Picture 1: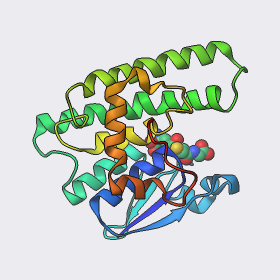
Picture 2 (picture 1 turned 180 degrees about the horizontal axis):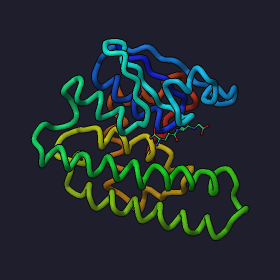
Picture 3 (picture 1 turned 90 degrees about the vertical axis):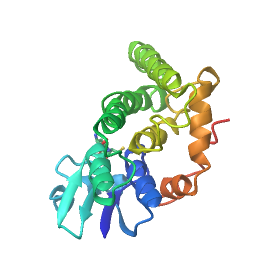
Picture 4 (picture 1 turned 180 degrees about the vertical axis):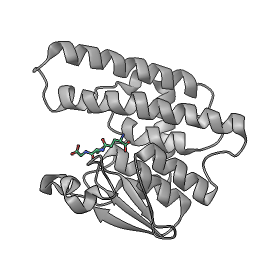
Length: 210
Ligand SMILES: N[C@@H](CCC(=O)N[C@@H](CS)C(=O)NCC(=O)O)C(=O)O
């Protein structure tokens, strides 16, 4: 049994979506940011970086922080969503790392400037808007003629999708990225994606991509 420590954010949703896709039972522990729960000493024992998501695998006693590491751990444990073949596995890893090092951090910074503090730092806003657009172009080119980011539905899709679901916050115009829009809506149609999005609680409707 997996214990998931999470909140209503893209990095948290990656893991609840994956657990829903795996169809395994899991316990949810909400870590409410407004109460500072991510800084409590009890949480730091399993999440030393003060951030969600974190899992504890009750079968082994192992705790795992960092969403990318958690996804690899779960994919290996349950034998799904990460190919065994080395070349194919590497391709999924490439896009998982692209999300972890590029799409996630840049969109996160874009939210801070463009969504929460518009007008405060014009240079940062322009720079982040341009970088968001560049990253979306990369993803759009990759998705040309493809159903998923790699050959099959994988942790690369589940890692990127919750970030793209915040397209309004980071001012990405989906009209300019038709392949991203089609992929976004394709994943949105999945029951597991919708269920996982609303963990640990419903915090508004899921953006439709229209
Ligand atoms: N690289 C980390 C980033 C985790 C992260 O930034 N989590 C955010 C929510 S999306 C968080 O816990 N923020 C709380 C805080 O910074 O106090 C991962 O992918 O797990």
